[in-house]
Amino acid sequence: TELNTAWRYAFAGLVRRMPGFDDPEQIAASIRAWNAAMTVLERQLERTGAFAAGETFTLADIVLGVSVHRWAASPIERDMLPAVAAYYIRLRGRPAFQPWALDEVP
Image (cartoon, rainbow, N blue to C red; front, side, top):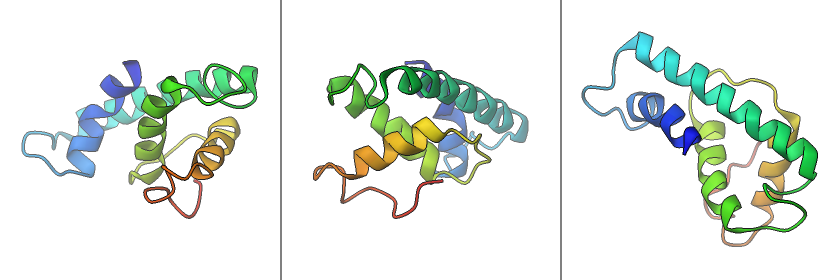
């Protein structure tokens, strides 16, 4: 839930270009919060070495995968998060994710 709250304003303004989501300061704050939340995920993935809850894919990875994909695909400055990048590569290997996955990992 914290990831969704973090990316909501920036994604709505930069990707969806929704009216009312065009305040540069709020976009910047949303990007900072988004990167901070992704850093929390980075630490978790460093601990598990694979997926959000451990070695196997779970329901949590579906929800987190959406946020990771939006983070990777959005036109924002991103922190370097190697565990998240490796996680995205693992997600790309899943047949259900492949139609939406980016070819390159940021």
